[in-house]
Length: 270
Length: 281
Image 1 (cartoon, rainbow over the protein chains, first blue to last red):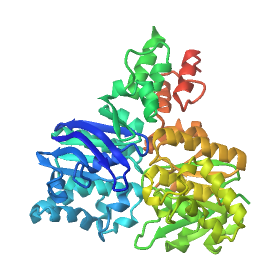
Image 2 (tube, helix red, strand yellow; image 1 turned 90 degrees about the vertical axis):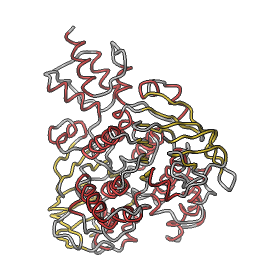
Image 3 (tube, rainbow over the protein chains, first blue to last red; image 1 turned 60 degrees about the vertical axis):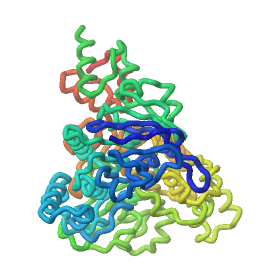
Image 4 (cartoon, rainbow over the protein chains, first blue to last red; image 1 turned 45 degrees about the horizontal axis):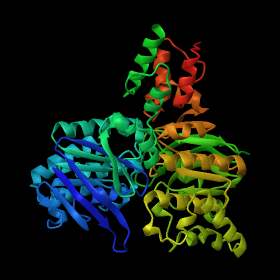
């Protein structure tokens, strides 16, 4: 369980980036955080493993107060995959990169080996095993970053802009991976501008603006609230927009392209 | 000769025996807006690097065939010369912002070209205005959010007034509203400056309507090439695993159910309008 209680964060220079944020994320829960650039999404994410400590309020991560626990200790529980892959990669080979975190966390050699093989094959990185991470394409680097974090199987995973550089096939795979993590009781937080991807996940959604949480609800409620989205500079998913423009309107917005197809075909046959 | 021309061009990076680009023949004319799509690792970024001379001048490897920009052979023309023709906005803006303030960063390349002060000032404020970052002029790069950094990088490139603007996933770090604003900006640039634009993008729903042409790459080859509506509604495009806009996917599903609309829609409004008049072929 990750818990934010009236958390505020102010930079040394005096800029307040988070204001009075309260939030609970349960095991097995999927949460998406959306909002404009500079809304405080990444700052919020950085509070979950102690990289940033609240200037006011308390963040508790699996019963550890992040002000008192070390980042290393918190990282066992929470794995963050940053937006910018280049900030996260530094080893000489893809294999070393994945092994690094596992060894740091003190896993036995046989576990390290097993987790490494799993990560390489799941993320289709086997053929790059001995390649330098910096030679990978943008999308491959991002996948490697996710692989490195999932390799040690943290209880909560924060994915900051996970679809950047990912093609459609990889996005589908990412979605499957997220569902798999949820069935195993892991909490997943996705920070993303990729509204179509967020919509396909149908998660609980938090809308942020100016360091505050403007709304917290199900995707259906959030993405049909035009005023709210306008305020937060977030656009509607295309399927929601279609649901509202089409005549007659469906009772609830289309979640998938197949929902749209069935509705249209059904209306035409009437 | 076309503005950009690839002739039987192949390239493989050092340490890799497989060509990343395989016998590419491609012509891009002045004024086109081209989207380059395809699965990760298909050779998109390599193709871009071959346009601005980073390949082979910075990334060595095995190469055959040739690439010309505005008649200049990319392999033998100094990169500084190519940089005046081709403005490149990288996927990661941090790779191209390094001065102490936004204003200085945008002015950097212009100062290097020894442009008169007055013109530098004009172009910097023109570019900042275009990207809505005038209020950030005095800020240091580390004070900016990723989206702001990206806008600064774009402004820096546009200030050079290049004839080709190349962007590698320009919307990936921008929030949706800012991304839409970028689309408007690119459209405005294209219309008013007649600039040629080449964009690598996965989120086609944002940019497809802007493009005059889409190229889909796979395994180092150009697999499909044509107007967006035509390319995106092809079976091969769907199989290639690129991000076909959801609305176009609904069109394809309708077609497979025997309901063919006269136009391939890219946006919700287009599909809703086509359905409201119930016109099927």
